[in-house]
Length: 281
Image (tube, rainbow, N blue to C red; front, top):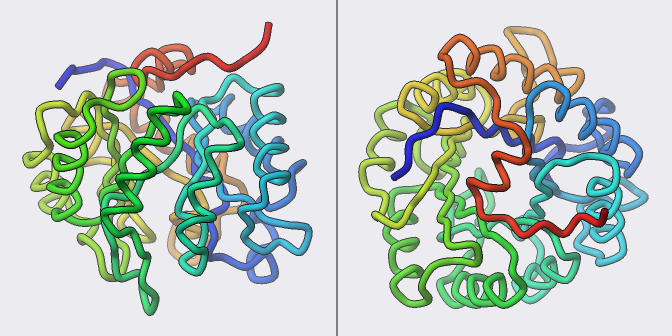
């Protein structure tokens, strides 16, 4: 696995689980997403992981909404635009495949089914395989989301079956601290890293809720990259809610600077991930 002196910071600003009513500061409209993206890029983010909401602030996989967000962010930022193919836990598998129609730079590809709090996040192997092949055909770079150690083995199975993804790089993100998935501890994260197949070229980590800081510190120390955002954590410190995704990006950007692995530029991120440049001159 290649080592890097820079840190890829991904911001996941919205997610599909939180309510706008409970968290008015959650960016759910297109204008709010664009403002968030611009601010987070300035703070050190080089990729954005998007879940889209409709006019009622509910999660949606509507093509029009997805395409509008991809186009707006591509026009107003240089961020790598990644669409979630997870949607919400209630979205049907067939609809989740249509996310690629919006022509993102990258898409998430979760490598297995996970108990997700009181729900089940369904990702059977057939769906994973179809998404992998369609991403190859559409020239979209997948980010493999790993919620458990079994997902690392499933990733190896996908690579063995279908070869390398488009772009020739394999980037994964460990999502830790989900109730039902791997715990958000350095020991669990490093166990997963030790199991990664040889084809993996870079990895990142996400800590849900109060696990976000220990996971960020462990990932930086071990040569990994970071994902933060209100999708994963809405508490900045004890008793203090996050008011803007920029706050979370700024904090880990500072950590990365202290660790002498400063935030990576968007161009360096594109090179590391093997992303196709869909931007127009």
